[in-house]
Amino acid sequence: MTSKKPKVVIIGRPNVGKSTLFNRLVGKRIALVDDTPGVTRDRREGEAKLFDLDFIAVDTAGLEDAGPETLSGRMRAQTEAALEDASAALLVIDSRAGLTPMDRHFADWLRTAKVPVVLVANKAEGRSGDAGILEAYELGFGEPVGISAEHGEGLADLFEALAPHVDAAVAAAGDDYEDEDEAVGPLKLAIVGRPNAGKSTLINTLLGQDRLVTGPEAGITRDSIEIEWNWEGRPVRLIDTAGVRKKAKVHEKLEKLSVADTRRAIDFAEVVVLLLDATLGLEAQDLRIADMVIEEGRALVIALNKWDAAEDQSRLFQGVRKALDEGLAQIKGVPLLAVSGMTGKGLDTLIKAAFEQREAWSQRVPTSRLNRWFEGALARNPPPAPDGKRLKLRYVTQVKSRPPSFVIFGNRLTELPESYRRYLANSLRDDLGFTGVPIRLTLRGGKNPFDR
Image 1 (cartoon, helix red, strand yellow):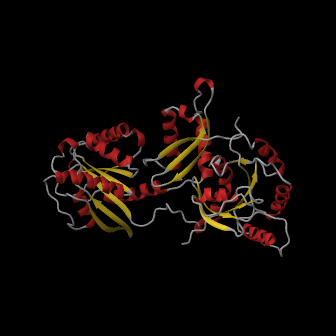
Image 2: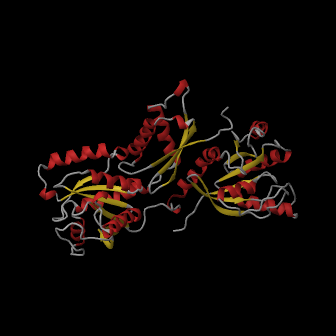
Image 3: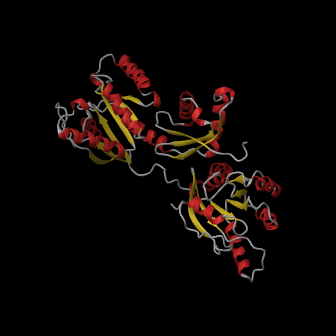
């Protein structure tokens, strides 16, 4: 499947900083930049990224009012052609120079192109462009976005203005748009736990064969073993690992290597099953392993193995559930299942849960839906007001998945209490389908040129 990313065309009169903005969005110096007007003559495309927005940026020649037989006229024809299949246009002006007759002329022309327009007032670093920004309202494209393409200022505001148009284009493309983070390929599933929790026996039962050496002696498995397998027609790459003991008990060099190998297995996995011995219950070392998995940002499923040999099963299950919720407060709702690697009880449910966790771990929430949730979360529980001045949280974006990672933009975010940050993270999990999945939540302050 070929990815059809939305196209965003950067247009404007010569020497307003279009190529500088293009280079900023694509993350490298592709377009030539010079103070001489007309350096760019052909349109140039590049894979661009603005926080979680992925699109094709198109740098165009400066718009000139000239006949089609001239070089300037042919350059304008290239710009017109670029607009034909564009999802949005960035009309760039120089905020320090203010509006020129050419800016006004081509703003009038652009209104006939039937392409959503975001007005960008470039070179707005400091306050040197304030007058030009205010003057730009006259063009009738709504609130100008003040940026400095050269210094990378104002990109959060540009994202906020551009996101609705890119999201709409992605939604309209439907199945033609392919997310690079989509959960594809075999499920990479690591089985971890303390020594002798029954990991190899469980895998042998899943495979229906004695693929791994097992026995009552702890520590038979010394290194991670990958096994290709199919579950109900879906490919799985099973990773059996050596048991992880407490550090104080890791004496032999070989066992130290086994622990390091388990860490590598967690790192390469998508979903990790932490296997507990139901006859021993939950121990502190189990929580340390779970913390290791969460710290690495992997999806986690916890399974109580040897369930057929456990006593007072209902009380045991509820006790482990409560202990997990208290011990893993940063990621409540991790799936907890009762299984038996010996008899096969609950193993289909375990693999199904692993696929479901990978799906949640891989999902990407559209920016519009994410900010509807954000507005609701703020309305239910408004942010605090240190010193009587309320903190301003402006919007949120998902910057990646696997693990899901989000950035919240606002002002004075260094004063936001950790308790409110946890409230946002827990609400996000509960409301948007990330229950039991580790997420990354970053706070980022941004200078808004209109917030004086």
